[in-house]
Length: 164
Image 1 (cartoon, rainbow, N blue to C red):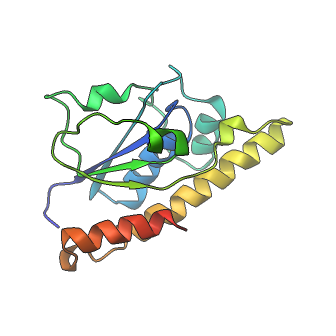
Image 2: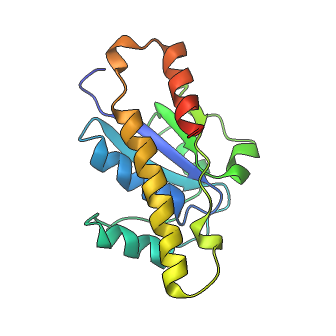
């Protein structure tokens, strides 16, 4: 891996919860080797309050987080992505834009914590679960021996991580 941080885009339909969590998680666990981004095919226009709460409770910065359209990252002046990961099944099945930079693409499906109904504790626990599952996958990803993996092997590892 080179000295330049690799760009990683996490996609979901609403870009209000899972992809937002993943954006911050890759930056923490990637320790300067990765830059995280997130977007949605049909963004909600705001970050879910419980996503912000769970990030805050775990000492993540939430400044600057916003729900944005994935078209923003398909523009010629957008940062070139090295990896694009869908984290919801709806986004996986949608026709994605053509991403500048020919990134590697994988699907890491996570249940939608924003869809969970119930009291506040039940809903907060759904966000904790989603964050833990994303964190586990991201920790596996950043621990990969990038220097010894060719593109095909790296793609297989990305897909394998999504199967957990």
